[in-house]
Length: 491
Image 1 (cartoon, rainbow, N blue to C red):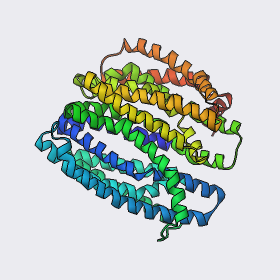
Image 2 (spheres, rainbow, N blue to C red; image 1 turned 120 degrees about the horizontal axis):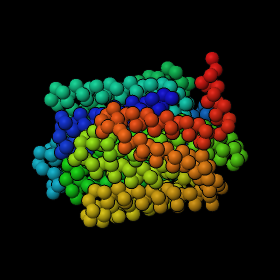
Image 3 (cartoon, one colour; image 1 turned 135 degrees about the vertical axis):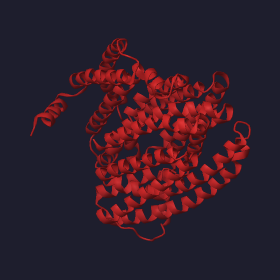
């Protein structure tokens, strides 16, 4: 519940901030802000997947109650992160030096100057993120989600209030990235203090041995490929559009991307919580039947949440965008809707990634997705030149379908032994009827609603009521319905 509370607050407030920021900065400066954020995101790729690696290894050591290995691993990962921070800082300075050459044809001199200043500040933010990722891994592996989500909410609210105040005082893009950096530093300090006081874990100033380094990097290198794939599929689109079009088009595309990121976040809330448990189940050698039952259960709950969001966005999305940022941003609807279709199924099966990581069989998946990601770049460039920014969206959607839904599922079935056909039968049987019934009813109701915020909210609540009732009777298993009854009626 805290995870969804955090996601709701983060996404609702973040979406409300977009028109506020655009009104204060203008579409062009907002495009610069989205571009510098994308450039900083590229540098995060150099983290090489160590945050996920931390969760996996600590979950294994915790399952085996091996405190010695746990302490040695934490010491090693801290040293590695320190070295990475220095490396990323150096790479970032090289990128900063080359910014005028990269964007000389698409941005004005003033926009390039702003981009350079903002990028330097966000480079510091990236270094802080790298140094604190090990803290996030420790807290997640010990499943201290109440503290983790509560602090995320408080820090995020502090950040948003600070942004609003600074923009009202007349500050611009540079003030926003400074606020982002300061709040990130504050969050890191809070997590470190909490771990020292509340988690029985040892920090040691010790250089990692060769065997530990090899084990970490062999595992992490393929996790890093997943990070690279995500950056290519999403961040490279910003770069392609920024170099082939203009800052205004980039700003429009970024709004659609933010809606998709919000969509992704609602699925990750469930999968992130269950990742340590799935890793421990695999390491304890539970049967395939028990493991598949757990994966199907997680997938069905993710489909319930994602299905509702997809239904209301399909029906009310254009009205929302019109009210949210204005009719001139109508293209945002397709930028968000097109990738949502494959993403519903991709996100429903994210828990299978934890199985691959626990078995150390995530390498082939990473290579498959890397190949489709590079194909995505080529296809996106060709399509953007011919049909504009919507071409980048189609490139990403095609890459998701071919990579995640075809190639990866074939690998999961043949090499890991997961019956993905049964998995999708469960999803379609228990989730699709709810979507297919509620969407036409929502369209009918939409025709009688006023084109106002009140009408939009009323439509979402009406659709939500129908969707919730249908989900209770069609999506939940009998034991799950009994659990809901006990939750509601028990004292």
